[in-house]
Image 1: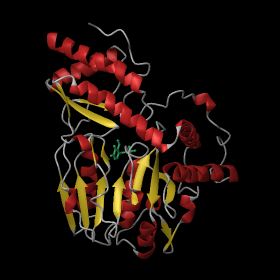
Image 2: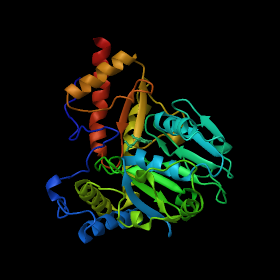
Image 3: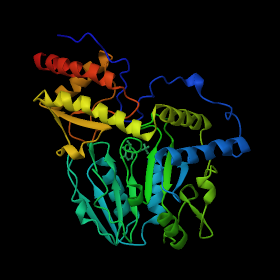
Image 4: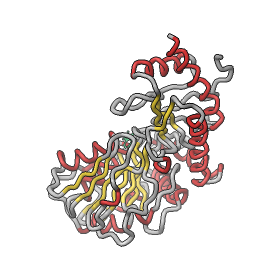
Amino acid sequence: MKPLVKPGNANFSSGPCSKRPGYDVSRLQLNTLGRSHRSSLGKSVLGQVCQKTAAALELPPGYRVGVVPASDTGAFEMAMWSLLGARPVDVFSWESFGKDWASDITQQLKLPSVRSFAAEYGKLPDLSQADPQHDIVFTWNGTTSGVRVPDGNWIAADRAGLTLCDATSAVFAMPLPWDKLDVVTWSWQKVLGGEGAHGMLILSPRAVERLEHYMPPWPVPKIFRLTRGGKLIEGIFQGETINTPSMLCVADYLDALAWVERIGGVRETMARSQRNLGVIEDFVAGHEWIHFLAAEPAQRSNTSVCLTLDLGAEQVKAMIKLLEIEGVAFDIGSYWDAPAGLRIWCGATVEATDLQALMPWIEWTRQQVLTG
Ligand SMILES: Cc1ncc(COP(=O)(O)O)c(C=O)c1O
């Protein structure tokens, strides 16, 4: 039977992700538009982005938050280009983005001393191989495989190296052990449903110490530069951005942060993602033709939920098309590089009731595809 109820919001893309419930662009605080980002108003609003983010995420004292160019990619590349090379590197990858970081470390930075631990889609590499004397590079949540790191127990508290973590689809959705993380990057358009373009860079005091005592042997372009005269450019972490940001995106992000505060903070955004995953877990448990790509339940993402089906790739495509035509789910095909299947975003801005409404449609479209 064709389901009668449709999700109120059919946006289940894994980035840019759905806007928050109740989002209204006309409610943004837009007094910064048309003003210089270096005016006292601009700087104070950008400074608020840094301070409010640190408070919302409950970062330990001494951790710095900055807004940097070029989204999560910009933030992560900036960190790799500025910090790596001082020690051997252990890089862990298990899906497309992590593999890109591994290849940049070996092919672009051409670091001589790199151990690469890779796993196929659906699995994690052996994290226990991480050497506390080395720098460790990894992704917290593999957005394209739906496999996440379950915890930080494998990271030594007394490590000598730094940990560099791309956590773009994890921040605000998964508990992060900040004391185990020296560099964390993410972007606004994921769990908070913000706008694309800007990256967030979080640095631990140990990362800052490395920046101030290590000079990479390669040229660092201005857009990646975090130090001047051997000192951290503190302004970057107080609202003085390296180059011009979009103040419209900034206003949109502050609106998202205010929503986080209103609903109960990061605990509630994490709980919302977890409840959303629960809706899909219940559905998968009741149907033998659909499976999590993540082999281990403890490693299942609660944001980018990746599922495989007992259908061929063309049939999956037909299903996704039909879901779109019916207006019940947009952009839920798996990443181009990942096994064919569905990828349904479950981050905090998605409503569990919308996922509940979507599940019968998945069953119905599969039936339509099977019966031609
Ligand atoms: C794990 C991960 N890293 C990096 C990126 C690239 O992010 P951005 O487009 O914000 O640069 C993405 C985007 O989905 C991602 O999921």
